Amino acid sequence: MSEAEYPNLTVVFHGSLSEATILRSALEASGFDTFMEDENMKVTDPVATGSSPLWVRLLARNDDAPDIEAAIGELRSGKFALPDED
Image (cartoon, rainbow, N blue to C red):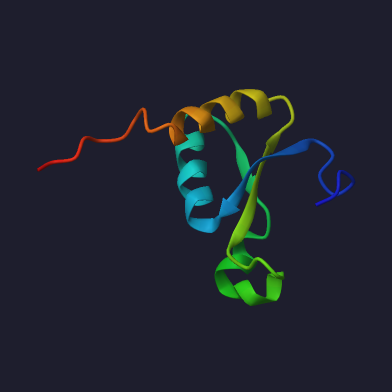
């Protein structure tokens, strides 16, 4: 991704398609708009997208990026995890 392609967007997460999908859902539920680069291509033909077929970039507006990165940090911290049932 070059800045020329998406001048108003910032990469807020780079990782697995499954984790990006979960993060995007949580962020959108919190009111943040996000964009997953090459999402349809990754799902329909992941091999065609290059050397890391199941890794994606989650992008957001530049103005929202700091708040989104903080939200992702909280989500990934385990703060919202459900307790194990024995």
